[in-house]
Length: 209
Image 1 (cartoon, one colour):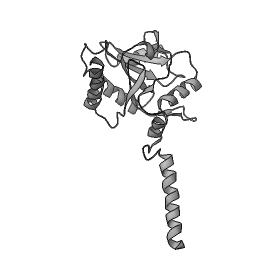
Image 2 (cartoon, helix red, strand yellow):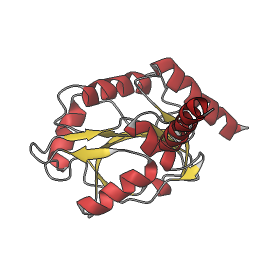
Image 3 (tube, helix red, strand yellow):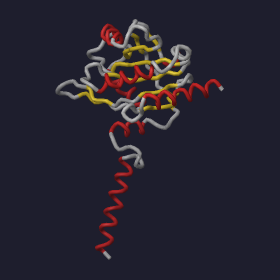
Image 4 (cartoon, helix red, strand yellow):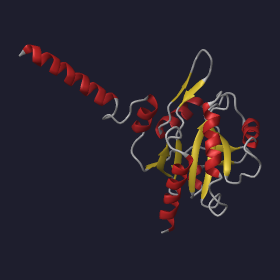
């Protein structure tokens, strides 16, 4: 009996620990775990003052329209820029009747220590000059600790490597509704351009009903 009971107990303990660590088998990476910890959708997007590439200070809650938000690390050697290239393709799937009147795109820099308005404006120019409704921005008048807390609250995992200063982070896209609630979170590594476009369009159509 003991030969059977001991492995069963051990297996049960392991199962329970894994279930707890993965939030009920729903989060198997530090990225998804942080996102799950932030809460279920829809949830309120925490307020953060931002400054655009044109030196305009704004708050997403004041836009009263849909916003597709992402974060970028400009010194990233590859992945961040690949995601922004995908975002550019998604942007061009929408017509001028939708962007910017009903939907805006906002890309925010992670790097408070190295990025400034001049740098993000130059980066925006890589995507062309005719992109109304796509703002590149920085957190405005906030310190690193407050910004990291903000990221954690919305479900973004971020870690700065002490030895190199390189920033590792998750890459989610957030769709924020006119009522300042996060209504969709997209994983660009797992969802293609058309999938993201169609889901945003569904939200826009529901708003029109």
